[in-house]
Amino acid sequence: MGSKSSSSNQTQNVTNDRRVATDAGSIGISSGGDVAVNIVADEAFELGEQALAFGNDALGLGYEAIEEVTGLTRDALSAQDEHTRRVTETLSTALKTTQQMNKTEEGQMGELIVKIGIPAAALAFVAAKVMK
Image (tube, helix red, strand yellow):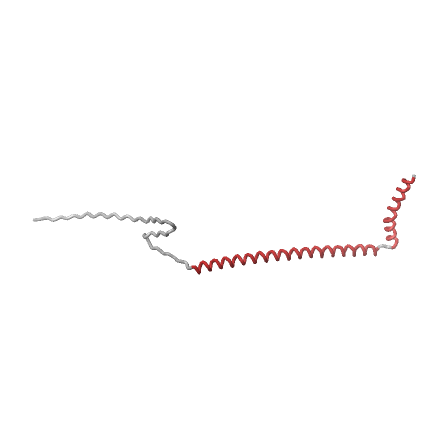
C-alpha cells in the first residue's frame, strides 16, 4: 500500500512600470497601451497660415470699410446741418418780409420813428447837457 502525494507552489510577481524619461526634446512613449502617432504634413501648416493671413486681410478690409462709412456719415451730417441753417435763414427772412408787408403804412412809419426817433432824442438830450 503505498500512498502518493504531491504539492506545488508557484508565485508570480508582475510589475508594470510605465514611466518614460526623455532628454533634449525627444518624445517618449510608454508601451503600456496602444500608441498613435499622427504626423501632419507641411502643407497643412501652410494652409493654416494662409487661412490666418486671409482672416487678417478680411479684418483689415472691414476696418477700412467702417472708417469709410464713418467719414461718409460725418459728411452727410455736416451737409444736413448746413441745409438746416439755410432753410432756417430763408424762413426767417420770409417771415420778416411777410410781417413787414402786412403792416399798414402808418405802422411802418411808427416803427421807423421809434427806431430813429428814440436814438435822436437821446442824442439831443446828451448834446443839451454838454452845451450847458
